[in-house]
Length: 80
Image (cartoon, rainbow, N blue to C red; front, side, top):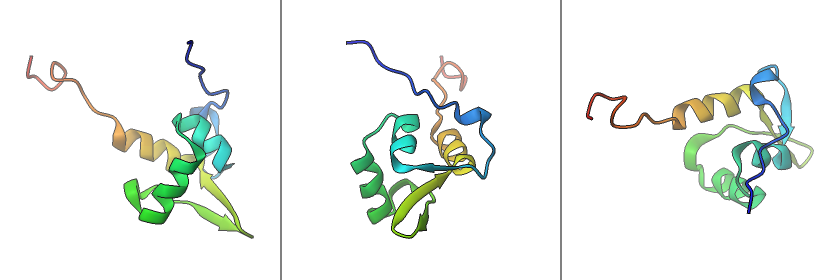
């Protein structure tokens, strides 16, 4: 099965742009339910905004989240 890539270019969005849970799940390639678990448990510390019962994520926060989760391979760290 071929993996689908997100149609949302997170790097092209202004930092303050709000994405809903569906869009954020698409960018992060995770389930919307997973985002709900992260919100309830505080896991990973991904900031969110609640407006009238709807949940949004700022593009800048998603970018920061991805940068914090980026890891270098052993060779790039000088261990290979």
